[in-house]
Length: 74
Image 1 (cartoon, rainbow, N blue to C red):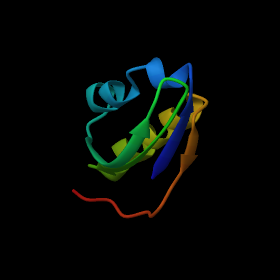
Image 2 (image 1 turned 120 degrees about the vertical axis):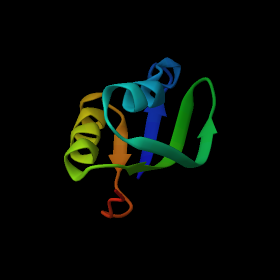
Image 3 (image 1 turned 90 degrees about the vertical axis):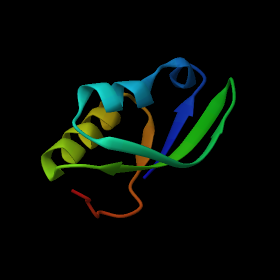
Image 4 (image 1 turned 60 degrees about the horizontal axis):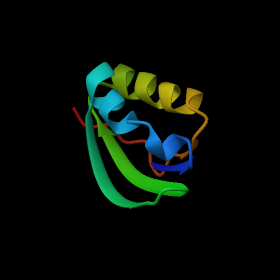
């Protein structure tokens, strides 16, 4: 998935929150983060329910979330 963040959101530790609050592995595939805008292409691996919960949480952050594919690794 690709996630885009504005100047307020790039200052938040949301990758840390994903790995701490959900039983998933976060893999950063590509990223470009600056002080006023950023985007990151990540993959989430883990139990389907946890990946769905993490994805739902990402949607609540106000960041733009664009899923690339819907495959889940165990």
